[in-house]
Amino acid sequence: MEPDDAARFLVAVITRPRDLALAREAHWYRIPLAHLPTNLAAEYLAFYQTAAFGAERWSVRYYAPILRYRLTTRRELLPDEADHPRADERYYRLELGPPAELPLPVPAARLRRVTFIMTTYGQLRRARDVRELWHPDEDQNNLGDDLWGAGLAGKSIR
Image 1: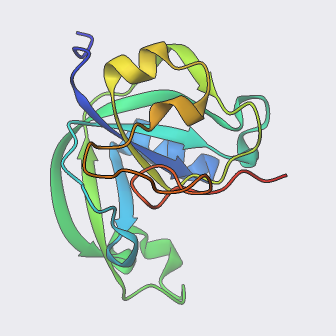
Image 2: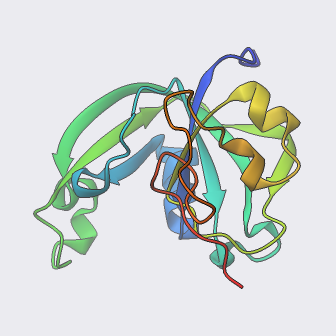
């Protein structure tokens, strides 16, 4: 069943095909506690794919419902990376339901650095560019031309 237009979505960057495979097949995604978005209250997680995804790069194509949140360490999440410099850091593990594909992908017309964007399903369905996903809250008057997406997303690379 498709989400309704008001469903809250967190668009999160996914930099490695392995991480997208974990989200789609093992049904989880990790967020370092140190980089937690200011508002994590989302019903769904959508994935912004970086250059590592070839023809699907710089776009949002897939999403999944968020079932629960769990605090853990990177070492527990990725035991095969036990020697990683951040192995003992704490992460949120977002346990996900079955993944789905957006009716139309949302591309970034120009390369964008994205970390997190809070949006809605309606916004995802209507957007023709990643920049259209973020819309400032009424209490956030002017964040500046370089800043978008929950205060954490990035700048246009020129």
